[in-house]
Image 1 (tube, rainbow, N blue to C red):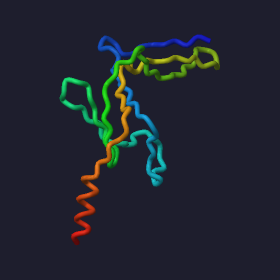
Image 2: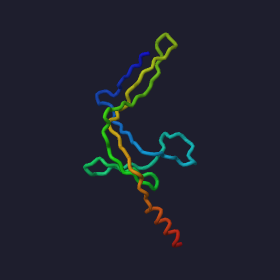
Image 3: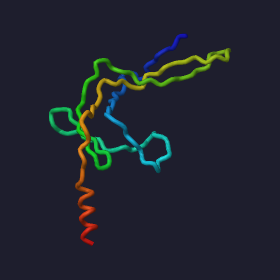
Image 4: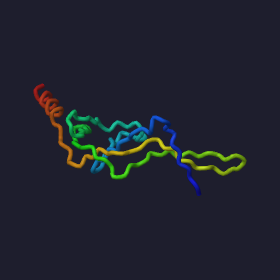
Length: 127
């Protein structure tokens, strides 16, 4: 079986993607019963320093990570099914959507952020 790979990026080149790699498990709330598409997990911030360091805040936890170049780039592909002329068979084609050359790696344990909880807790105690 032959599968064609086409790049529809044109002269501009393929869009650059980055992988966000977390160690452990990201659990969603039990009340969430939808698809993971467009699910907001947290806030990713880039520091202005010379090193490629990032901060990822999820709820009351903060992770610090760095940008790492992959040894081998990866392609992001989209599978297309096309009907061939005069036959009932479908031809499979892969379209290049983007290329991944780097990942943001968070390999340390999350740092707890208590400032929001503490101020809320203190204000409740004062009432």
